[in-house]
Length: 315
Image 1: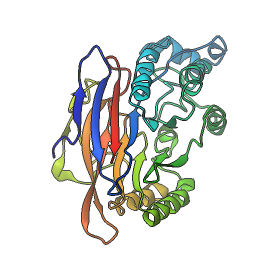
Image 2: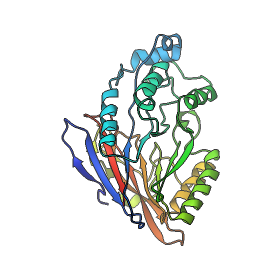
Image 3: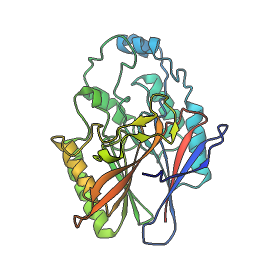
């Protein structure tokens, strides 16, 4: 397996840029999408300290505390603006934990300035506990309601067509990972079926965005080495063995199988979570049953260095 993206800017004093190109086969104007991931906004207010679970997290969670990751995300968003991106997508963990302080940073530095950004949920957005010492036993539904009130689109699933040739789909596959759900959700099944059918009818190229990488289900290519390391623990990952796979019961397995049986229209999957760069390939088939692969690009988070982005150009 080769690394199917190019590093076009690796100067550590600037935003690190990777680029890929995808041929839609339709010609016309290019569509540019800038992908970034895992900003991990970490901040709190006095109100947050009144919640004992959050107070324990605030005491012990020092990584990116005080909004330290904000300047990097701002640099990445400025990069996207500078290349006239048609769309910015952030694949989760915008919030390091669910607090008023973190939400305030997101509203001020993301939604207020870049309201059309598409943002999937990660595994941190629902969490009161991150390195804290008290269990997070708070009800989950009020957390979802709070997040949805502060999101500019549906938090579970959204789709958008760009340039009459690219359909981008964001899906939550990580928010309830620590609360019993192991991936996708029942309410995502029908929208995904509908949009893949539409994309096939219209000849759209489909790009999927979510937080947690999916299993490649290809043990012959493991372990996968990182092409650039952010988290020092993530030099290699066995992507055939991670959790989201075809054999899982319910919506997660159904959605996985739906994705991997449409490789002729799904031309890329984009995610984060591991805080290092990996190029992977999902074993898949085209609609006619012939074998294929779908590239899965696992991107380093924006907090490292001066920021990290992936520029996706669809020709």
